Every structure is written in structure tokens, then in C-alpha cells.
Amino acid sequence: MLKIREATPDDAELLYNLYNNHLIKNPPKETQNMQEWKEKISKFSANPLYHLLVGEVENSVVSSVTIVIVENLTHNQRPYALIENVVTHKNFRGKQYATALMHKAEELAKSLNCYKIMLLTGAKEAKTLYFYENCGYNSNDKTAFIKWL
Image 1 (cartoon, helix red, strand yellow):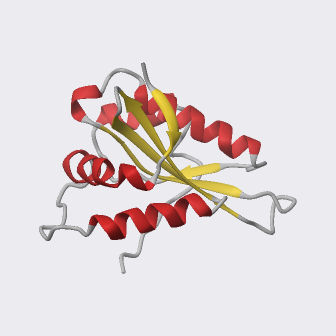
Image 2 (cartoon, helix red, strand yellow; image 1 turned 90 degrees about the horizontal axis):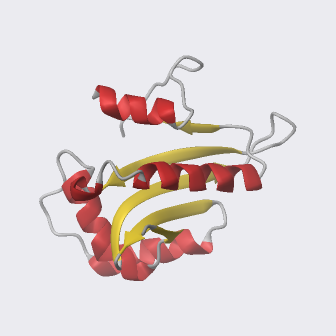
């Protein structure tokens, strides 16, 4: 049974492993400082506009979604949301865990009066693109540009 909750600093190592083994194609070679990860997650938790959601099965984080709420002056000053770092452990894919997290993120955005949610993906696989379409996202309304810094 999937339990969805906000991440805590205690999840730092589990998230590190999830991201570096199942999300990032070329993770950094140097070992990350888990204390810094814990501090960063604490900052996220303290920010009401930043939500690091995790899906937990049997006390292990197996899926995650980040949603950030951005204050805005247009659209009657309604905020919008950005989604990043959608990932599920490869052994837990196909069980609708990421879908459940995406629905939770959408509920959160609606509860905060967001008028839209945006996300970018670097994925090219049809099944991943279909996943996002199945969650209600389209790639027709906007054109995305990225400038790496």
C-alpha cells in the first residue's frame, strides 16, 4: 500500500539513492554530504510554496514528485505550479505510484488556487510521454526553452 507524504530530513539517503539510481542519467561521481541533503529538505519543509512529495511502501521511499508554487501577478494574481523530479524506483514501476503522486500534486495546486501546472521532461520514451498525457498534461499549448547554467 502506497503512503503519500511530505519528505522529511530522515528521507535524505533514500531520496539520494532514488534520484541517482532511477532518475539522473549521469549522477555526480563524488559522494554527496547527507547532512547537506537533510538541511536542504528542512528548508523545503519550512517553505509553504515548496512540496517534496514521496511515495512510501513498507517504510521505503519508492517514488517522488517535487511541486513548487510560484506567486504571480497575472491571471487575477493566481499562482501557478511547477513539477520536477518525477521518479519511481524501477522495481516499483507500473503500479500507479507516480500517478498517485501526480494526482496529489494536482490536488495541492488546486487547493492553493493555482491556475496551471507546468512540467518539463527530458524523457523521449513514448511510455513516459504517455504517462504525462495520461495525467492530463499536453505538449501542444506551450513551447519550452532551457538555458543551462
